[in-house]
Length: 591
Image (cartoon, rainbow, N blue to C red):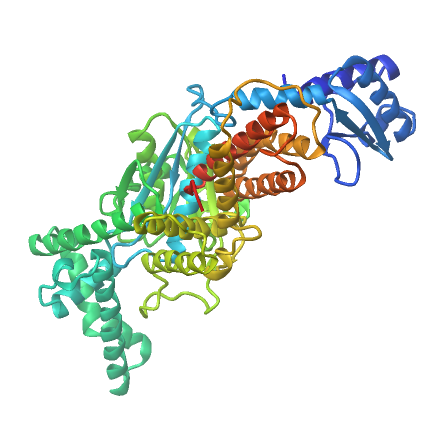
């Protein structure tokens, strides 16, 4: 039983004994900085049951708690708030429980819980990963890690969009302009090479449209009748019919792209347990639609198309099969979700990491799956996120001006190199060690800057600002971790035993912040928000740095003080590393 549960139980007892009143739950708050205390009880809800002033109620409960619980050293009442001060002995015992817990905050996998499948990335095989994918990948990977740390079994997955007219555009452009170019002959990663052909198609297609318009054709007709788009549609039909030559070209170009994607994922530090491919899933869902028709969930219009009416739920009517019997994206997503549970029967929920432009799509998808009667449909979550902008403006893709993920990562590493050289603190490092440090700092800055923001918010990402060594940045937190490791290396004494020093107020502040780590992980998992964990880590680092500036550690007068302060530093370092590990951020041993 934790301290809040103990206090709640005792308050319920106090109200019963003092006022003969029964309550089931007590409202807790963090104590405001300008008041003394560790835990605050909100007294106002008790006024419904007790005829007394808030101050009197708070005072009587405070006296009762102080008499009953050795953990409470004193209290104060401010209007309708009871602020409790925990004893030094409580903080000491609390710290040593934390100190001795090697995986503090991380819950073992609960086999009683259903597994969760987290989908992220889901790129198209016609272009390389870009800045939008970076936010998607970092969010999905971090949420999967946090859910696992909260005790869930997790499967990380992506669905790769490897078919359709956009893929055929790249294939056709390669056929026409490629001259048998390969990643090896071009010196380009496979995804970048294919992306160039997607851009080349668009450029040639636009030229054809202009030419047709110049001959008197209206723009919409020109877009449909331009020879390139007609050829691309013919290629798609050949692919769907299994034409050997078309399928061979598709497989070859996709293989180049996957090799390129994997290199980017490796550098970014994300991975997957299972991949799904749209080429395998695009026919899924039709059978379920037929079942839904029989159950009256869907209905058929006169033209033969199949729809669902969600107007009663505040949405609209949604098509699930076209009149020619072909599926739409909604059909595929219905079928894919069902297939995933067939493939992994222990899955009881899914998280879809997809941009906020798809908010409506997922409301409809989840509602349809619920109407179809799947229990796990109650545990579907759309991890919706905002766009990432750079100071130069919004990203574009068809024109070839996309902010490439590889280029962005390299820019972050180069910026870390420049700033580190300016600071000039790398004496004694080999060139290899320096390059590894630049990578850790640069990518840590990128990841932290993106993950510290609530997923739903749009981000203006400034690479230079993200590598600042001061403020709420990755490098600032990494530097504090490296400082702690330096302290530990200098501590040439045994610091494994418990101490009984009188605490400095800054030490208590750090202990309190450490103690919040398990609950922070749980909250971040429940809210699907890495930002909660990222900002907790920043607050921990701020508390530690305030402690570091306020007391002597290795120069402390008493050996007991040295021991405790090194212990405290070590645990802070472990929690920083653990938290950043869940965010996918590496820590440097030296900076």
